[in-house]
Length: 62
Image 1 (tube, rainbow, N blue to C red):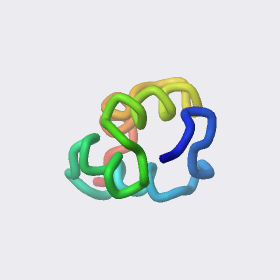
Image 2 (image 1 turned 90 degrees about the horizontal axis):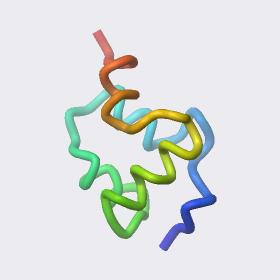
Image 3 (image 1 turned 90 degrees about the vertical axis):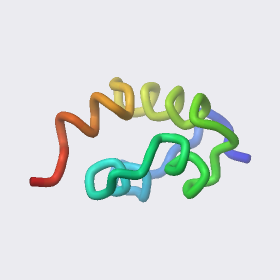
Image 4 (image 1 turned 30 degrees about the horizontal axis):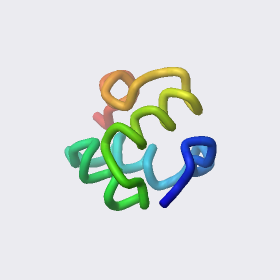
């Protein structure tokens, strides 16, 4: 289990998965070691200042 204060570096797996896949936030949480979609969403928002969905929309691979 990861604490909410720990998140992969900016170029980490979570960012890549959001940008390059259509995996759900729930699946990304599972793949990156978080217990739930809520946990990864809170950590992502704390680290990057935006929710994962907003990040994905703004940074989607073309």
